[in-house]
Image 1 (cartoon, rainbow, N blue to C red):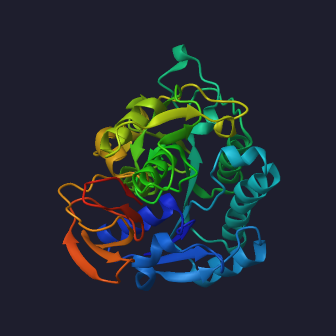
Image 2: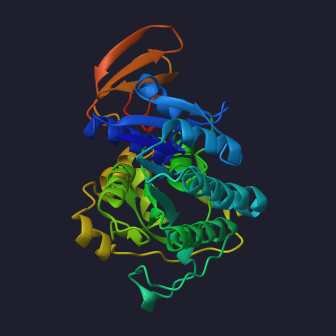
Length: 374
């Protein structure tokens, strides 16, 4: 079976690739990337994937790639996904998230391929949700409150229309907040952990700058989401939409508190910064994903505590004893073992790591356990 992942160099895409390679070894895995894509998330699988340079905004590029592969399945994760930036670049978000999806689906139609396609939507599509409307289901009204969400609603609707009009085998998911290793530090928890790491390194004052902390979100570990995406395309009904979430809601404040507990610096101040405030905020997103769970048997396996522990934000380096001056080290992880390269003296050593790290990251060292920024 041939599987193509768009957005494979990103957060969820790279974890989906890991899941497929580990659990479905007979799959011939293809990845779409731009020639200038950042590839730090997929360095460890470079030799296990068949790569294709492709710009999702270029319909010819997309058509030729799909024609060459003739994939049995496509996981379409390629998108602009950082909500806050969507106010500054609404055209880019519309072009990428809507236009890229159109290019993929139209290529399949014109090539007359029986490809099964997963379209990754977002819980942000629901936007303004009132407490009495929770938990959210697939039939809740969509009230998007930011340009990113508007683009995902349009993507979602277009995919459904494509199925209705041409019989395209499309399964749409609306995935709620997912976090874990490799999350970019422009996102909340990763930003908090990065700031903590810089504070522990004495490169920043003991102050964390934050946006609104009262928002309630439904958090799921990205590894559980990757497994859910596979099940969505394997068992989901064509033309249907499925919400995916753990059903476990927490405030952003709770996540920050857990990261602060992991820090070796205990007197860190928290200050709101207007630059992290969105023009419109979604106060509550809570979903049980009942339909999806009943259809597929999927359940989130990783708890919120473990998720915050291992997020792109941070993980605790338990029992580590490092002498000498503080320094920042590169961390590379393969099959659960971490190779630590000391940039100060050039010496390298290996250690057993029972927590997953990313392919590259930073760790604060200096004679104490600390927060590992990934």
